[in-house]
Image 1 (tube, rainbow, N blue to C red):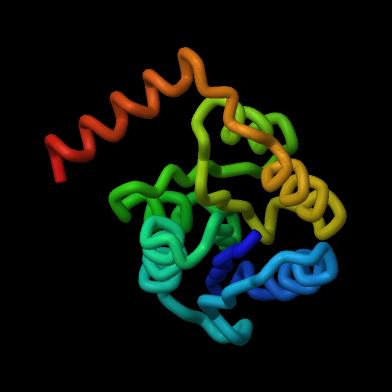
Image 2 (image 1 turned 90 degrees about the vertical axis):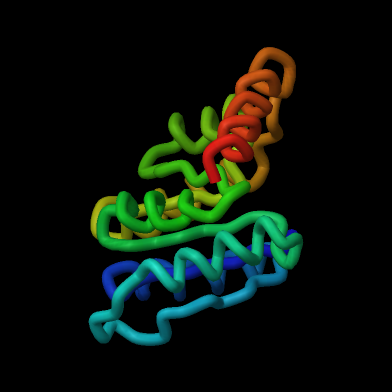
Length: 148
């Protein structure tokens, strides 16, 4: 799987850790930055991750910050992104099964490295269930077209 990943300064260390794990697991990783713990404004990085996903340059995206909340909000500004905050396994699973999330947000100051690995692997492995959930995704897509 091709995965675009981006972080702000607070998520940098977790990003580096996940890049190593994803690469070891056989995924192709596109590092959208940041490249240090020096303070940075995160929205352009999250936009880059989201654009790579909706343009087909990446299959999924991961955005990381201190809490993951701002990163999720920024990524969701890209039409076609369905970013979900996944700071636990339950929300990671449901974000894929019910919402077909194509971008995962996670908090580097909230989630430890081991749990972040488990959440990421679960999120990547969980399929979308479709069915009644597809109708809801279709409604979201319709609203995006109506209100660009």
